[in-house]
Length: 263
Ligand SMILES: Nc1ncnc2c1ncn2[C@@H]1O[C@H](COP(=O)(O)OP(=O)(O)OP(=O)(O)O)[C@@H](O)[C@H]1O
Image (tube, rainbow, N blue to C red):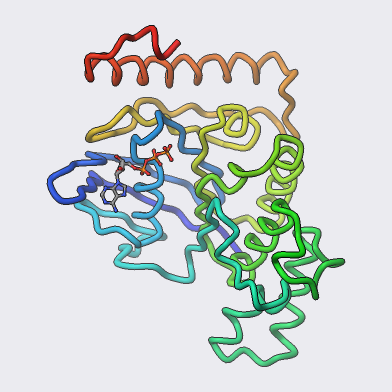
């Protein structure tokens, strides 16, 4: 598994007459970890869905130079909700499912499923059903189900958003390890500024919608594992918080609402 480059050129996304995203230009290097941050509702998920090929765009999105025209196995998507797992299949069967559909022999798909389930720390839960797992374990299973396809790009939409703070912290550290082990390119949507500081090579901050674009791109060169107690990490956190806060205040002012409401 190696990471692919992603190129967004003048990307715009509209739903009917509503222009959600406008003129986004971004080049993502192979193996990079990009976090998308921005005010609520600005269009982070919309942009991620466009890279996944779920949403048509104006402009151009390419992955390793190939235009995105629809979903593909080169791009795996991890959603916030783990309800995408089939409740009637065991965790191992869930992870194997895609390979089974594509006719991979049973022995090979079992070996692969077990390898990726070991990578996400679920070797002890292979034969359990989703309902018998915690939320964090279900998210690990969802990640294994994506990784088994050996995608060059993993797109993650607030994958830890529904988890408690301690579980989220554990999964963040595990994701950083998995990312290094696989070399895939990750684009990760989050509301959580600390999550972005702890994980990303670059944080892309979007402007408030409508017609959201890129406000700033912050490069983070701190070594892993990163720590919230680190002074440089704290400086970055504050800068990102101020950038996003300014966008939220601008959006509220545009709507004629008090800017103090955003403090
Ligand atoms: N299928 C759709 N049809 C019409 N409008 C949509 C559709 N999907 C999203 N939108 C609108 O696009 C805008 C951006 O939504 P999106 O979910 O991408 O924002 P977000 O930044 O990910 O939000 P949040 O941070 O709250 O999760 C919102 O105004 C939303 O209502």
